[in-house]
Length: 226
Image 1 (cartoon, rainbow, N blue to C red):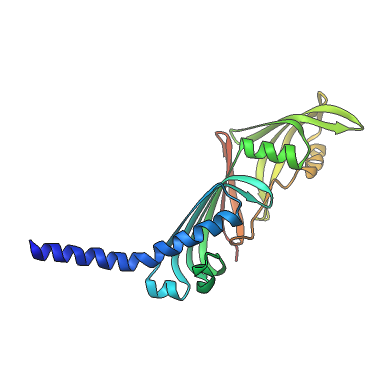
Image 2 (cartoon, helix red, strand yellow):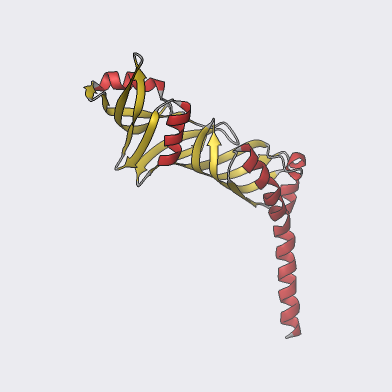
């Protein structure tokens, strides 16, 4: 019994020694990630051997931020899964998240209806803006000023990724003041709104790879840009 107890204690101590540096670093980086992304909440998980962590080499770095902002655009959630990560170990100890390199990684971003509505109202001047996301389409209603007159607008569009760097509205139907506008003209007018989101450069440069729209949100997939 005593031998089992001693063996158990040894296992616990070894696990604590191995996991300790990763846990400490995760906690120190969490606050900086939250500040960097102006997020409501953030979590960070570091995986690596103590000796590697001391040199700034991490096997895995996972982070998630909720209620974040990317280039001024509200994002409901950002998740990163990075592999083969190199950081500045000295600055990391002080809680300063500085990436030196990443071998590979994936990303997932979620933009909800309310986040897009606020962007359109606050950044693009659409009055009484309302947004619905479902079944592959974004429906936007609101009011805009045309020739000093305020008119009602209804826009239905898909969301598409362009050049891996921009998320844009691809207009399917646009009605202005009750009159339907040709699709080509609608896409030209949508240039004043687009892009909805650009691929972020921090905390790591990303490339968008796809987007789906359903159930009240747009879900973006991405990867670390090479």
